[in-house]
View 1: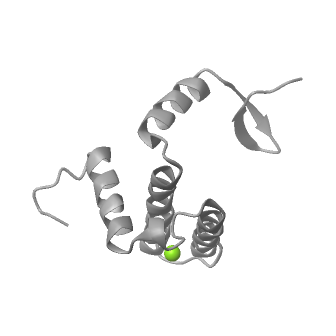
View 2: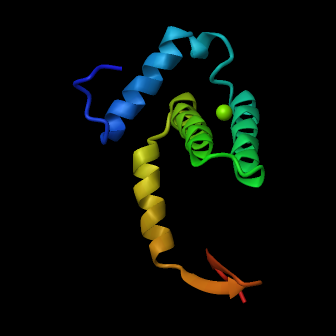
Length: 113
Ligand SMILES: [Mg+2]
């Protein structure tokens, strides 16, 4: 990774993940197949769960969360949608939702009751 990159920039993250896909020709080798990517994301989610349930150091949780984040950005590349735009649209939507305590935990959702 270049030292001159702005690490706070989503555009830079996207460019780095795109470079990773290009380096390994993910598009031409099944790496951008959405069904395969869902399996990879589920695998990383399992590693996140393991980091928590096995009481591993927070660095492990951070690494596995980064793995999932990289896959999410890559999935946006594979399916050709703008994840940054989707993020801000969704945040706007959920910021207006109501919350409820359910079994001692807060839940923010579109409650239809
Ligand atoms: Mg992992």
